[in-house]
Length: 453
Image (cartoon, rainbow, N blue to C red; front, top):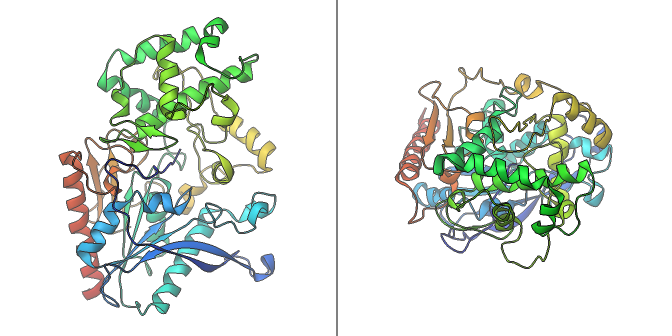
C-alpha cells in the first residue's frame, strides 16, 4: 500500500504557493495508430516562488498512486530545498489518478485501462519535463526527480530510462526489489509485526491471541461491525480489514500526529495493545474511525481486498492501483501467523493470476519490472539516493546498502515511510535531520556536475 498522508495540523508542512495547471499529454506514447493520436489533460502543480529563473535547477516530483495535492502538501522537504537551492518545483500527477483520467469515468473500462503502465507514466514525465523546460526558458536547468514509495520507484526508473533528461533521483522508501518479485513473500508482514514487537515484545503474542478469540462469533458481535460475518469470505474480509489497520500504523509511525482517513496519533505503533478483543477494535478505530462518527464498521465499504495484499485504498485510485498490481507491480505478500502476528492469509502467484484474470482480463507478467528496470543489477547506474526508514515495513524491499559512490543508500534509524520527504518538524529525530543534510549536499553536487561537467 503506497499511501500518502493528508495534510496534518501538528507539524504541518508549510503550504507552498503552487499553481494548478494541466498539460496536454499524449494518450499512447508507443503506438502512433492508437486512440487516434489523442491527448488527455494531465494535472501538475508548479511554483517558481524560489526559482532563479533560467538558472536554478528543476525539482520534479514523479507523482504516484493518488491525488497530486496530497503529495505536494506532505513533501515539504522538496520546497525547503528549493528555497535553499533556488529551484523551480513541479509535482506531476500520475495518469489514471486524481484528476488525470485519460477517459474520464470510462478510464477503468477494458481496454481503456490498458494505457495504465509504468512505461507510459515515465514517458508522460519525460515529455512534460522537456516541453515545460522549453516553455519556461529553462533548457539549461538541471532536473532532479523526487518520489516517495511507488513515486520513488518511478524516480529511480526515470534516472535509468531517461538519463538524458534527469540528472539525479532521490527515491525515498522505494521498494524496487520486492515489487519486482525479488523479495520474500513473508517479509512484509513480518516487518509490520517487528515494528510493534520492537516497542513491546509481548505485542505479537497479544495480537495473535486477540485474532484467535475473534474467531468466536459471539465475540465478533462486540466488535461494532455493521453486519455479523456469516461466511468464510466475511471472516477473511474482517482479517484483512484489521491487518490493514496495523499496516497503516506501522507505515505512518511518525513522531507527530498526522491525518489519514482521520487523525493518526504521534507514534501510533506505541499505542498500548493488550490481548483483549477491545484492543483490536480500538486499533481499527484509530485508522478507520478517528472522528468517532461511525457507529459501526462496514467491512466492505472501509476496506477493499485487491491484488495488493497491503491494500489498494478506495475509489477510482484503488481501481488504478489494483490494475497496476495485476500487471507490472508484483506484491505476493502473505501472512502466516508464525513469522508474523496476523491470521494465515496466503496470496500466491496462482491466486493473484486467478484474481487478475477474472477482474481485469489480464495475466500478470512475472519478472517484467526486473527485466525493464534492472532489478538489483544497478551497478552501472549513477546519481540515485535510496533512502529508507528502519520503522518502515517497505524498507527491506528496497536498496539498503550503497552500491557505488553515486548510488547512495541512506538508512534512517527512526524513520517511517518516506519521513525524509516531509517538512522539518521540531519532533524530527536526529537521524532524519542528518539524512536530509546528506541528501541536500548530494543533490547540490549533482546539479553542479550537470551544469559544469
